[in-house]
Length: 114
Length: 116
Image 1 (tube, rainbow over the protein chains, first blue to last red):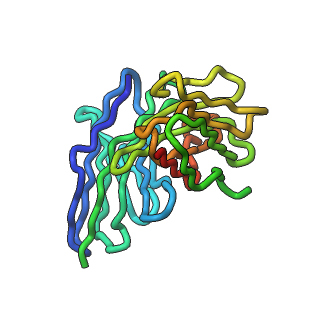
Image 2 (image 1 turned 90 degrees about the vertical axis):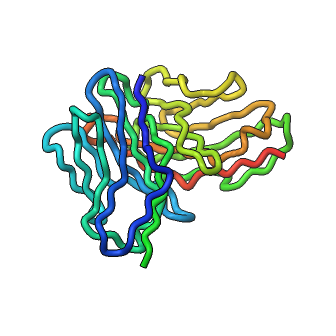
């Protein structure tokens, strides 16, 4: 069975500083990995995904994530945080042999301080 | 419509009553998912439908929960004999359902359920 861990409930960062939101996963087969963001009073939005190929994936709003198979991680990063990046971030995983079932992490709340 | 729609947006019910939550996916999307998001918690997978295949119901928390998808489009999540612990936001998502590279889920605004 697949699982996802987001070890930090909350991440605080100053505007202009780099940010990292951590995610580790466990699957039986090969992972399909996703990041979604939930802004206050708005629905969940897709940020980026890793299916295959280049381990560094670039997504919306300047975010990127690096797939690391040996560490089973898919950390979300951004070189320079904005106050508007403050939101709830979810990592999600699908097992390539597990149909369309997608497991989401508990979420990490990002606070970017001006 | 342009996106996934869900109705009602809010539902207040009394313990023991049945509720039905509706999801209209994006036209042409063959995969449809239901999740539950409790206050301060992550998304809990409930069920997904893919085309004409049997749904994956492995996330449904009890036999009080059921879902159907009629005509490969609209889906209804039914909770029977609601309990206070069922209070949560119920999210629906849809995706193209084809090759994995296409697998981005598009979420609806959710139905906020409160069981008194």
